[in-house]
Length: 241
Image (cartoon, rainbow, N blue to C red):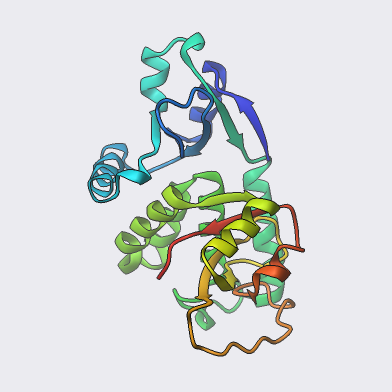
């Protein structure tokens, strides 16, 4: 991954890749926002849902830039900020699908898996959250789990708006501030792209027992102090459920 200055040429490249929006978790007064590309099925519907969510929680207001509108109405010298770019994103997804297929054999035994645990679905969802390619995830759901399309796409958009990317110091402070006891990964927890969600806080009275399950490539459980030793960047779904 890397960052590139926001320019018209980059917007043209992103449009060619299939993206139609940029979003930034910063206020409109921030003159150097960090933009994340998005590819959503319906821009108008996405913006309507965003307006509804903002009416509930104004603190979550992101900046939005519709690529086609920006190309039509904004000059190069008016574009501000940097864009988060995933390198070789489609190739990386295919390589992970092949790696996980060797372990779970979901291509040859699809009947063994369902929506709640479908390794390929989880990989594509992870990819969609990192790369903003919501359309790819929508196509997979529509083909394999049409009954889950509406709820799952709403959840994907919700996570996209709230997803955190923290360095080690920021992650440590976030774990302490929120009294996090246990986190769970979507894909292999040692993978730098793993997205961590909250499983338990210090206030929970459940007693957790951990096994050495890191040979499993999904849904790994780990306490924060062990997570912090794995890498330098942490992707976190901060929603408390």
